[in-house]
Each structure stands twice: as structure tokens, then as C-alpha cells.
Length: 282
Ligand code: PAF
Image (cartoon, rainbow, N blue to C red; front, side, top):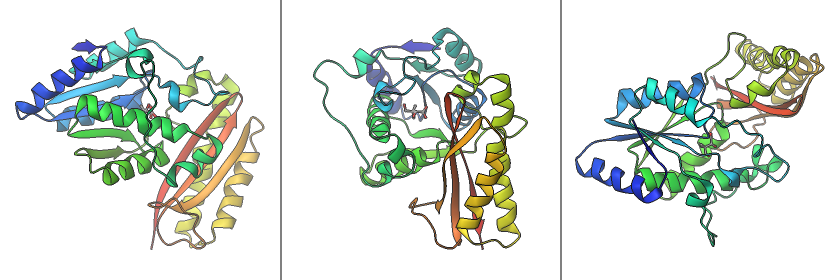
């Protein structure tokens, strides 16, 4: 497995691979790899000739009061895990390599980026789309792999790819969960034992709403109240947003029909966790 730290080395290698007619699968990450990332690497391994995992904690997607400095970093462990899944290349640039002095360009998907998570974290998705566009340029992937856990991110990246006619296929794969349903996330490691136990309510609340939909509930307000009531039963979990939206446009729905996304974000202790479920309503 090769480890590249410079953008131009990555570009050169990607060009060689693509000129040889081979496909590249890219798994963009901020490191702290867990089973969710590994499932994306396995899919990339199955579907492509060459697998590239990027490891870059992107400062531009953290707000001034967010956990950039505290975000877990352990490149040696990430390299070991990436290699054990058959990764060919880890692209791990420094921030000064990605954003040299004078860098002043950003890529923004308007509208979608200022809703939901974007309203609570101004500039977050601009940071994500800017770095993902740069990674797409450096790695020239045939396919890029993202987890459904970051559902809004996935919708925004698909939109960016469509709008800019980028020649990459965006693959969004199911959320990988702990046995109690908690969505895997690098931030889970920072929960205390009690917080960790209580955090399982997010998935339970979402599945309870899903059950209600299957039993005929079509009123988003009642579903939101149901999710909120369940979350409130856990003293260390504070819901920040509960949204029931059209899965494509992320617009709130008045009555449930078609594919809907139920999204929750909550503070659990000092951490902010997100989760979602997609439901096809007939
Ligand atoms: O989902 C993430 O880990 C990040 O937002 C991504 C896509 C790697 C961009 O920094």
C-alpha cells in the first residue's frame, strides 16, 4: 500500500491508472476509521481496480466552536486498517498542502447546504463540497463512496456532481450500526459509558416512527412528536432537530408520500450526533 502526502503525486498516479484503462474507487474520510468506513472500502475493493482512501481532517468544514482540535487522529492505526481491507493508496495530505497560502476558492451547493444541518453549522457543507471537489480532482475516481449516516452530505455531493457534470459515480451505502442500533461514528468514542448507552435512543426513536408509518401514520408533526418524546426519556440526550423531509429535495413534507427521510440531530453530553432513516411511503 502506498501513502501519498502531496496533491501532485496523487494526480500523477491517478492519471497513470486511468490512462491504463483501470477504474479507481475513492473512499473520502477524516480518518479515525471504523466499521462504517471499512464497509465502504470493501465495496470500493469489490467494484474497482484501484482503491484510494483519503485521510484528511478538513479544517474548512468545522465551525469556530466545533471539535476540530479534538477530532481523533491516529494515522498509523488508519493505515493498518486501510491496508487490512486491501486499499492500494492512502492519500493523506497536510492542511497546508490542500490549502496553501492564498487559497481562496470554494465550491457551494446553494440552498441544500443551508438547510437542516447547514442551518445549524453555517459554512459546514461549503467546506465539505470544496474539499470533496478537490479530492475528486486529485484522485479522479470512477466511483466515490459515502455513508448514508451523513444523508444531507450525500444529497449535496450528488447534486454537486450532477451540476458540475463530474465524471464520478457517487455510491451511498447503508449506515453501519452498533448492536443497539447506534450509527457508527468517530465521535462515539468520546461518549461516557452512560451517554453511550442513552445514545441508542436515536435509532430506537427513528424505528418507532418508521413502525408508525407502516401502521398508517402520515402526519409528520405527530411523527416528530413521537421521536421527540422517546428522546426526552433519556436525560443526557437533547434533540436539536427532528426533520421529516422529501428524500430528494430535503424540503419538509406536509403529508407523507414517496421516499421520505427522517433526520435527527442531538447533543449527547458534549458530542453532537446525527442519524436518519429513509422510508418509502406508498
Ligand atoms: O464524511 C466525512 O468524513 C467528511 O465530510 C468528508 C466527506 C471526508 C469530507 O471531509
